[in-house]
Length: 73
Image (cartoon, rainbow, N blue to C red; front, top):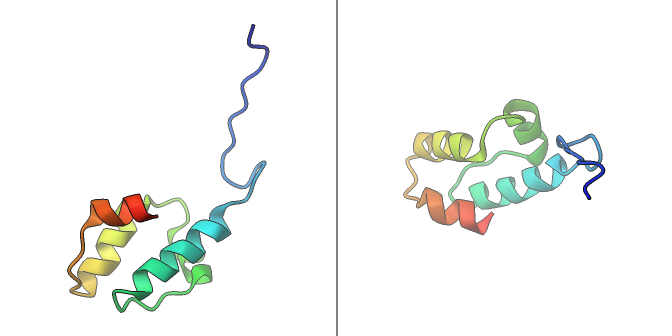
């Protein structure tokens, strides 16, 4: 019998935002987008990764496969 269910919004039990931002910064740098993990956290925390990857990479005129990048991340 289930007695409890835990919902973890990032940062409540485990703060993984810093890890996500580091990986995202590394991936974006390969396409010439120079953005620090701290800047990603500040500007894009709460924004879906697909949305800001698409925005930043499109603005950089980079050729990319968004689905492949999401799988890599």
